[in-house]
Length: 468
Ligand code: NBP
Image (cartoon, rainbow, N blue to C red; front, side):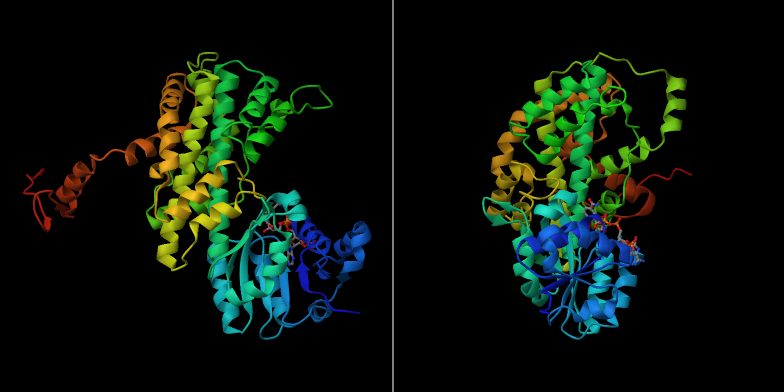
């Protein structure tokens, strides 16, 4: 029997769909999974693609069934299962082979795995895969980092199975070590902010404008035909119009308002903090999910303060659309600023324009405006999106609406953590004369940290009075 071109270990939702996608493109794929019944299920449901699979229960047979130099995609639960799987596979792999870890790994784990495997002569690619189940099956966005040689070995397959935007593959090698998973993490951080801002607007529509989910759905559908066109706006319309079969009620009204999180939003916020980059929209989104989880405490707090007023929002749907657009630009500006700084600190040389390009299709944050963003970053790698010429025009046209929405939201007691963070970031970034002079004075007062005076050279100290 001829050998497989690639192996996939881990046949849950993502691994099985990725394997089907690879087989669909004509490649022969070796399959394995910790629990062997999943391999049988996969073979039974593979239909005519079954002939392109080599199922293996034993790890040795799995590895041997792949052509050398071997490339094995691992798609298991992130964290310890990945390390255990790598350890077990290593017993059968040889120098020159490669592991392609394609789960939602913490990029620090990928940096460690890259070094550990390199020391053993095994290549490592840490690959972020976005697009969920459907993306894995029909074309995800693929963000690769790690050994460049191994990228060249796996590039043909990973490019073939990726999403395409106007025929261009949404897959790229982005840098060494943990670069791929770092970019996927920030992708998810931006996704958190994007989703949260959409949810904030939904809250205003529901509680401030008295709109039903079906009415909100129609608005999101219309917005999806304009500058906000994106996968997240599209699915928001579909979620809002879904009806529960049992009760006939809008499904969204029955879904408990407690948001889950698996860590990538938090990792983005932590990375931003560590790098000293403002990522307030992402932090706001992570915090909003944390507050959402406190359902019982929120019920108790409402009984203390009373229910916030309803039907009082002094804002129009047009303003909400513009506010969302301005907020989104601020969130992307922050996400790309984190990547720019991380790239400098880690020597990754992250290609920001390419990243925007491979996010144009396949991934969860795919949207019309990523094409424009890719062009801006290709023109000027270092630019903050807020001052990129194409986006200046949009911000000039939409920032007043964001201001109105945030102001009216504050007066109506609508929590808008992300939209208000976006506005504060914009106002802070565009103001030449800030207030950090006072912070520097305070720091020098209590800690002799020093400051720079605008009219002379060198570090200075104040002659402060004693407070004792
Ligand atoms: P899960 O994250 O649900 O993990 C299930 C897989 O992990 C099964 O194959 C399971 O084997 C295997 N596994 C576990 Br659990 N512990 C193991 C161990 N100790 N040793 C070996 N295998 C072990 O799968 P998924 O939803 O397909 O996601 C896979 C990866 O892709 C994750 O990192 C996830 O975060 C990421 N991701 C998921 C999505 C999505 O939409 N689901 C999107 C993008 C990325 P078993 O069958 O023997 O239990």
